[in-house]
Amino acid sequence: MRVESLSNWIKKSLPIALDYRKNRAGNKRKSSIINTYPPFPNEMVLFGPAGIPLSCKGRTLKDGIRLIRDLELDAIEIQLLRGVEIKEDVAEIRGLAKDLDIRLSIHAPYYTSLVSSNQALAKRSMNNILATGLLADELGANVVVAHPGFYEGVERVDEALKIATSNVVRLKMLWDERGVKAAIGLELSGKRNVFGTLDEIITVCKKVEGVVPVINFAHLHARTGGSLRAKDDFGAVLGRVENELPIKEFYTHFTGVYYEDEDELYHVPIKKGDLRFEPLAECILEKGYDVTVISESPILEHDAVYMRILTERVARAKGIND
Image (tube, rainbow, N blue to C red; front, side):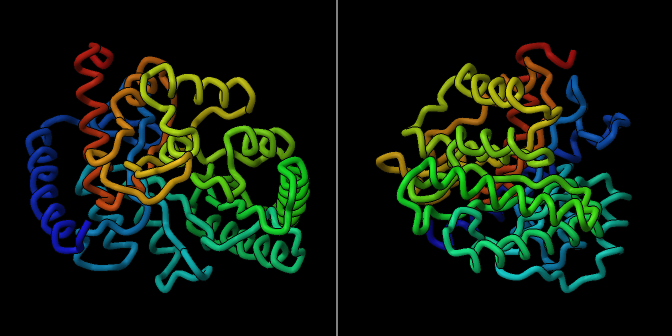
């Protein structure tokens, strides 16, 4: 998608979302651990973008958090990308997020490897993730999202799993030594040359307490050749995680995706791909799951609002929140 068309799409879409919010302004927000609008049965279906909203005139996290609340979204995953640094007052960000009931999480620098046989690289990656965890605690963020990394210098899948588990154990020891409270979140990958199948992530999480899966549905969909089609497909994924891991809520990513030969190519707006959100919304609402859904779409906040609206429609159609 060209930059011009993306920009025009955002300009057209966000006023619609804002008008939708204003039309519902008479509804009162229900009190819960983290408020949602309008209330779903479990009051814990949270939506937000991965990073500062594209339409945010100010490019600071505080500006982004204010806009997220204006859009009646509930969460933001702060993106560190390359370095562990935020050039803003961390205490002010934490206070603002708390005042506006915005759930914070944070993504560690993208190039990390907990699978490489190169110990220097693995150690550097663990230090970056640990530094992100310390920052997460300062911010009051509850999850640190990390990429496990490529199968570098590893010939067999079982060997990669052994290395990844060993490195995550070491990371968790560092975590505990520094008293970090945020959970370590390992993200499912969408490429075959990257560690992070559902099996691999669940296996590591089972072996290391305090580590949770980051269920990236687009990555899972791509890597399994487009397997997520119906409500039961999503239910099988969430049900397996629920049955095998001691977690009470799910942390997830969602976007449209283009893929080929069980390999993710790139993210697209939800309406442009074959991964539909409505079946997931049905699954979440019928099961009463507590879920955070982070939009990784190229049109970040637009698709976060879109997913929220779709969830409300599903709830009304099924009479779930009557």
